[in-house]
Length: 574
Ligand code: C2E
Ligand code: MG
Ligand code: MG
Image (tube, rainbow, N blue to C red; front, side, top):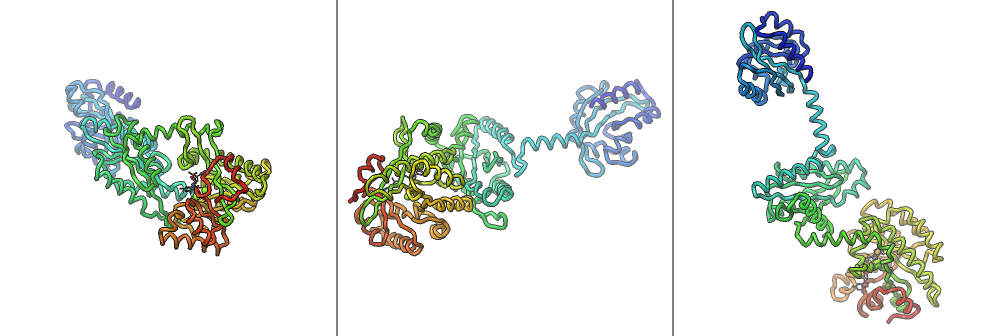
């Protein structure tokens, strides 16, 4: 720019009040910036630099042609308007930025200064120009990098926020609505872990294409980071239409993806909040869509939820609970309840399942079904499991001292997320050392979900445990999808028939067939079977006659504190 200004100053000095064209042109010919003289929109002269900028070889190529054969009308119009505003006599130094279509059809951007100069032949406009296309492109590239996600090309969080703010202002002004959709992929981590990051990247790109194709052009789809996407849907209200859009997006996500040559199934969880119905500000709208998404996820994934006010209160409570959970061990608020596992024939207690209870100082008893998933999510499960195993092993070692209890064992539930930690075996070994409990005093209960993420690593860890002499049982058997094939792969010595089968086993003929099939399968694979949730004598009888050896349930005893169990050890529970 400085260069252009100097040139223009020089030019003003040189041409003074009426310079002869014959003197003027040779000077312009040598200037290092582009110079174009024109009158009434017709080109009268272009210096060599200008010819170069316009992609021309000879002066004759542009002489007497309209200015607008090169200058884009819109950008030139702004300069014309400035000229008019100044009054033709005084025009000097009007700065501008002109978009140019070169002779070779390439586009360029010029930074210009336009002045009126007096030549002997009359007044002409002189536009001094510098090609700033490269700088423009750089600026554009930087702007793009700052606003778009480099992997998917979608707007990033920054641009998304900007657009959302704008849509909210627009909706407020026009008294319309704008819906915000939070979309989170359900099995992305699994893809990344098992198929690798390149496959994960491919998946994200394909998801981004599918999201864009299932929404309107006027909607903004953005990637917030990781596997989190958002969509801004202007003029969308709660109701059948929004529901159709959400179902459409879910439908796109459950259609199989081809990654590394194999078909991969994923799904998504969607939360939707609507301005101004659900939120008065952008921050609130974001938070509420997130809460609704979280709800969709915990309701079993592959679903959508619209935000409702009660979700907020619940999320608040959850957050408080989550932060309290961090101190649960330190404040000694966890207790283990033990539920006897009995020999169905003799009714003697052979072992006990350890079931955690959180005694919250304000909220009282909190179910493991609520806080265990929370602990998994916030990364506390390892510490909690270690504490549980240690406490239970110490207790079992004491119980083993009691008459007739030399083979007593405790079974501890192991979280799936814990099963990729290869140090578990060593930690358990140390616990055996410290408590004096031999390895056959501990059983670990796992579920088939263990194989849903990084199966190889999980199997490696489980085999290590078995080598150390720890028995594994497959819990909640019969509730999953792939139980039979899973049973063959997992190094388990026992299976626990899920409690949902046992009470109905006697009334529902189909369940009877299923339970019988599980028992005969277990027999042929040489696995022990433990019937869970036995509440009635007839159920115990049914299982026993089909050679199920062990049982557990309210019929014998509910999960109770250790002291209560001590009282029944060595006795038959009838
Ligand atoms: P689970 O391992 O399948 O545990 C059995 C559940 O069935 C327990 O629920 C137990 O109280 C209940 N139950 C036992 N007998 C009967 C019966 O006769 N009738 C009925 N209706 N229910 C019966 P609880 O204690 O609420 O535990 C729920 C789940 O929480 C457990 O299911 C387990 O998956 C998880 N959990 C508990 N403690 C731990 C732990 O220390 N670590 C991990 N990872 N998970 C745990
Ligand atoms: Mg269990
Ligand atoms: Mg179970």
